[in-house]
Amino acid sequence: MRKQPKQQRARQTLDHFYEATAQLLQSGESNTVTTNHIADRAGFSIGTLYRYFPNKRAILHGLAMREMERQEAAALAMLEASEGTTGRELVRQLIDFHLNAFGGRSRTRRRMILNMINDRDATKLIVRAQRGQVRLLRLLQDMLAAREPDRYRKLTDSQLHIVSAGLSGAIRVSVLTAPEILEDSCFGRDLSDLVERSFLRLADADTLADIGSHASSSG
Image 1 (cartoon, rainbow, N blue to C red):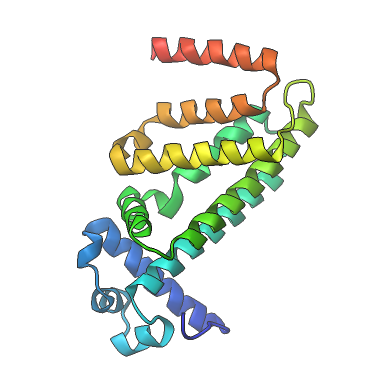
Image 2 (tube, helix red, strand yellow):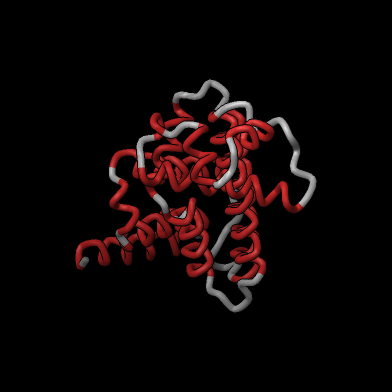
């Protein structure tokens, strides 16, 4: 990124470019979205765009980073304001945040993932996303263990990373292969149950598995 946005107006300009990019990705194929399209949709000249970004890839990287930062900040705020919420509700709320990235625009999310797959510099974005998700899961487990210590346990760092990778993988593969499933409430419920089960003590995990099996068979 070329010009660092130090003023409010500059940050707003970046937001316009990112939002325009997200809209274009939602409505068309990513390989047909050009910097000219983005500048036009955002309402700026192409010269203004190039003062901030050297190319389209830089815009996509910036959009991905902004979305990760927004998601993490919103999830942290939700967790910190969740007094009185049950452990199971906490898990479900956090899962909902993950499922509704990019404002629920599944096409935008799918095309961003496809761009990352083909981008040799995408590793740092993946690492950033993984670290942010592990931070959220660590905070979640601390809150669960503090509220219901007889029900929830704390995981090792290795276990947290496995849970995080499983969560990311389940969503990413679903976005790429069956995006319609993200609209199914059962998907969010089942994903939430799997994540919660990771934090449950053994007896409670068996109970939740029985409940989940019954819900699936009756649904």
